[in-house]
Length: 238
Image (cartoon, rainbow, N blue to C red):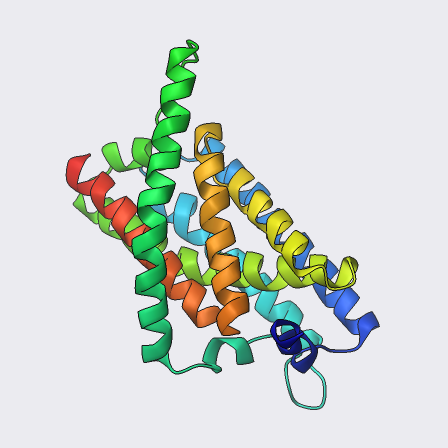
């Protein structure tokens, strides 16, 4: 019950919550669709249009929706979760969790690739690696900032906040099942299929950390660390 109190504390009227969630989800998927279209129309060198703009669009849509659904001068948004715990405490949690999860996710991904190669499945480079290879120094810096700073903030608000709470309300506070569904969608929307098992584990770790600490800051910090390490290695070793 204690883990669920955080959801009650930040809850808002059912009808308003329903509209807010629906509008936010529409904005999220519209932004992903826009990202796909931008990738089709712009070359890999157009870093801003491929990585930065879709994330700004997603966060902007959620914030605008939250603004219009604010009540009595306060946004009916779950941003109190961002500041409920001291930053230093969240930072320690994020480091400890990442030290455990990063090797696990890496091994799971390598195992998936190994199994695919054994059965003769042809694999291609992930899209982000393709873009990194074709980018100059300026492009690599933009990618790094986008993935290490923008993506963790936008995706944690999007998945661990809006989408998770939507499933949690829909299934009468089925917290674990909501975390599983959210993490599965998180994994499916991140590119190549052979990343899905590892990304599912990663998404579950973000979600469980948020639930345990009742703070989005913890999962944002861990997400940022994971992306920083992953993309940093891609850029260093190309």
